[in-house]
Amino acid sequence: MIQVNLTEKETNLLKLFLDNEQPLPVKQLMLSLNISDKTLRSMVRKINALLGEFGAEIALLRGSGYVLEGGDRPAIQRAAEEAGASEQALAVQVFRLMIDLPGYVTMENIGERFYISKSKLNGVLGNMKEQMKPFGLELKAKPHHGMKIAGEELGKRLAIASLLREQQYLRPGEFQAVEPIVIGEFQARSIRCSDIVLENLIYHIKIMLRRCAIGHVILLERNGGYEDNPDFHLTDAILGGLERELKLTLPASEKMYLYSYLIGQISSIKQDALKDTRVKIEMIIDAFLQKIEQVYDVSLWDDSRLRSGLVFHLEPLIGRLHNDVHLKNPILREIKQQFPFAFNLAVLLAEEIQRIYQKKLIDDDIAYLTMHIGLALERDVQRGKIHFDRIAIVCTTGQGTAELLKFKIEHTFPNAHYVKTFSLFNKEEVLKFAPDIVFSTVPVEIGGIPVEIISPFFTDEDKAKLTVYQKRKEKERLIGRYFSEDLFYGALSAGTKQEAIHKMCSRIAETGITPPDFEELCLIRENLGSTAFGNLIALVHPIELCSAVTKVGVGILKKQIDWAGVPVKVVFVIAQAKSSEARDLLLLIQEIVHDSSLMIRLCEAESFAEFKRILLKDAGR
Image 1 (cartoon, helix red, strand yellow):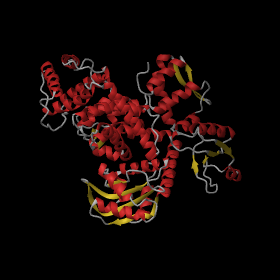
Image 2 (cartoon, one colour):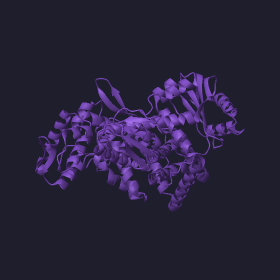
Image 3 (cartoon, helix red, strand yellow):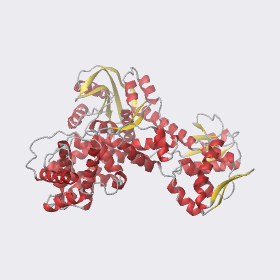
Image 4 (spheres, one colour):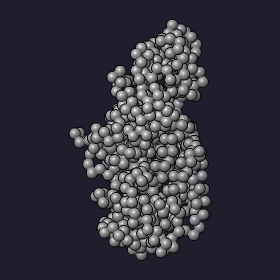
């Protein structure tokens, strides 16, 4: 069994040898993996050290290249898949290492710990950032010290519970006293619940104990009025039993944390009509999915992960609502910044819950639901990425290489209907073909058709460049379609959010695309929840789609104003018609909201041309 992790390139190199029984030329391998001869030799040495137990090696045949000799190829293939751990799996391992560290850790230390290169570690850390984002966590770097995971303690515990299995986070047998104490107290009170709920509760308590043991205590204010609640007595009994068994004393804030968690789980569990509750939850989700499809033309019906995530969250949430208990969400601000469009959709879900249960959700409740919706939207975008329909290939290295390049491009763009190779001296034929893009191995100009220079082997670097190009072209298209100089307010003077909304809505009304009650509809939406999402921006929009076409008004305030407790300098007013394209527009705006440095530069834009230039700068990062 291979014990050392291979980097992604090392895994790909080994797979090339496994797939080819003939020698592979050195230059072909260098171009294919975009590496130097020295790096290639180093990678071969490392792989050979691992292949010894299989009686195999990668040998260099002079004049021919490298070839894999000997060994059981199927066994090596299985071992290679295990050794070449995915970035997502490695990200979880790195998260486990860093989450409990008291201070900073360097990239060098992490790389040595997991046997991964600095280049692969950068990808792993990027993956880890994405996985931590919904919990309000980020990587904080400090010169000459390294980096650490930063964020609220509640966010860290939620991330641990979500990203790490109990076997990954805890040592074998650690806090084994928790299970019998919890089960005993539940049985003593005749509380019946599913195994999943009980397992989650036990794991959360173990996480709490471990975090407290290493000095990470949660900070929650204790409010009065709970002492007579049976669930509070249950919390007291569980913690009392743990303190006696483990010979420790837990802070009062941890009791409130456990009580807050318990009351949601148990209040839902103890309802007599549990089946009816679940039926209502399914009905609420169906109504929500139907509404966002009608209002925003966003269809998430096929996302089973969204439905299961919402069911998991709604059952305890409704239990808390019955007791008028609202959990403080310490990462509310971060969630609104990361998922502004998703937060708007979650407001519609909150309306459905209120309609059924006559209970109003606060922003903290809505933010918890937002995480599930935001991730579903991102999955939907990944499924619906734009593709080229007609692709021309200009390759000067021979027909064989051209056909290989065509094969790789067809594999990369399976939705392209037409992929055709051309000679460098056949530009007229390329123009007649009318491609969306030209891939060329040499610099060439062909009319006004976009040209991307690539290597004859279409490397990962080429694919990355193409991704940047696609993002920039898509951003240019969206800006050109939805933003205009007529709706740009470069020096908006307003002292309150109401005044800012009035002036921006009046500017849009002059175009004739909105109904007379457009401003009123925007204020109704504003009253449901603030549209100030942090990073100095407010995203004003009506409660329903009512515009003849989709356009975005932009106002750059002369001075920051207070917007429901949040400072705002840039106001976007979205007049939206029903269009799936508008969904992409809102996701673009969401991307803008995330970028703090971009928002700071936008605050200084005095003209539409400057505003557009700032938006397009560094597009595709």
